[in-house]
Amino acid sequence: MQQAARVSERTAFFTAEADDKGVRHGRLVEFDNTASIFSNPADKRTEGYITGRFGASCSRTGWR
Image 1: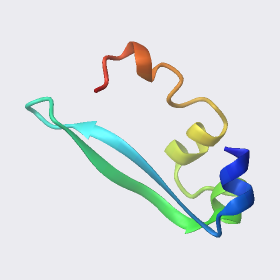
Image 2 (image 1 turned 90 degrees about the vertical axis):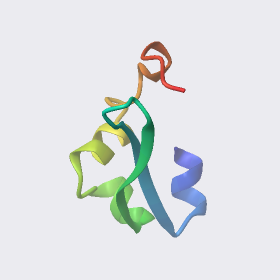
Image 3 (image 1 turned 120 degrees about the vertical axis):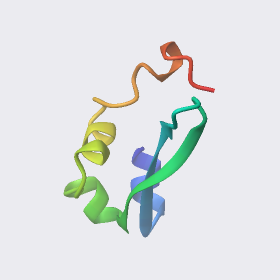
């Protein structure tokens, strides 16, 4: 994460959501200047990921 903040000018945060058949589709959550994403994200999911509260259990959920 720190590397991304140092080397990129723009940052995007994506997530995956399953449809009614269980097929996962990527969704763009937020795209902005890197400084804005890391210091004041507009979306709570982005903030959760950056602060380590989102995505910690991905390996236990059976994501493909």
